[in-house]
Image (cartoon, rainbow, N blue to C red):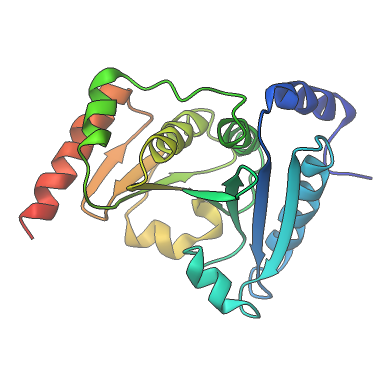
Length: 222
């Protein structure tokens, strides 16, 4: 018996109907992550079977450490979304099992990378991204029971798709409690920008833009 119900499969197939380019998922697993990696593998296997544009590569993070370093993966399970026939890396990651509400994050992330969902950012945001000259990393902490978390993660994914300087990680914080402690995650969603600026809640795009500007100022003051 699969992890997805028939009605969920039908809804996901409908969501994937607009895919215009291939999406290749790379799942990094580890013995340490145990059942989480097993569940992530089974779930992604079911997902990629729903559309011919999708493919999956399962990699042991310890056994293929070089590839993990190449793709910036330092924990497992980790999902990397690569787009197009050239498997372009847009800096989009999800760490943990995308269950509960985070399943919607996975599906929408695939739709974004696969061209089924447009990147719709405000003009001021796009101007900011066009002027970036140095990398920025967004970590968005989430849990499967949080209905607001997908919105925050997807906004970060859109920023990553719109700029080669942005990378965006969705992190299922209950699977990585050490990160929750490090960044004082008391509620979700919480976005951490370059480990300098913390944003609580699923804030509007304009407010996140202000915090991105704040992070640039903080970085320049280092």
